[in-house]
Image 1 (cartoon, rainbow, N blue to C red):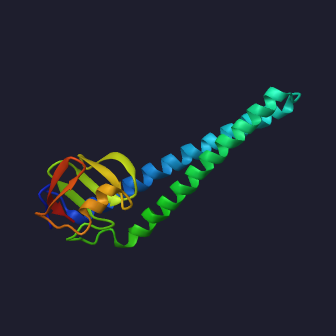
Image 2 (cartoon, rainbow, N blue to C red):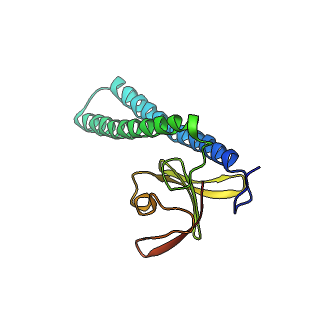
Length: 161
């Protein structure tokens, strides 16, 4: 069984990370969709009453907010598709930092995927890092033992898998 500096099985940890990421991301999408339903519901209730000028302004604001949340849902759905596309190869072990890599540094543990809030997986705190982020760009292609800097922080890569 392959172990790491974290004393874990690489493939199993990556699979657990992806599963947790998908669940967390689905929760975000569901929250966005519920917000839209609530906005549309309150708009429909308001339309049942007699319309006045202040109500029309309220409706326009609700529509604007629903559209903004709709844009966020679209973005989140695209990210979910990226996560789903990672499923077939997630247990592959990488020796360089790229999409799907787990990067263990002297400062933090990163899962290169999409932007996901910090999550606990098998007792480890991991930050979901977008492959579009400047931090990822600073570490992209690096290997175990390499160093990189982002803003005023210097990182040393202890392990990539």
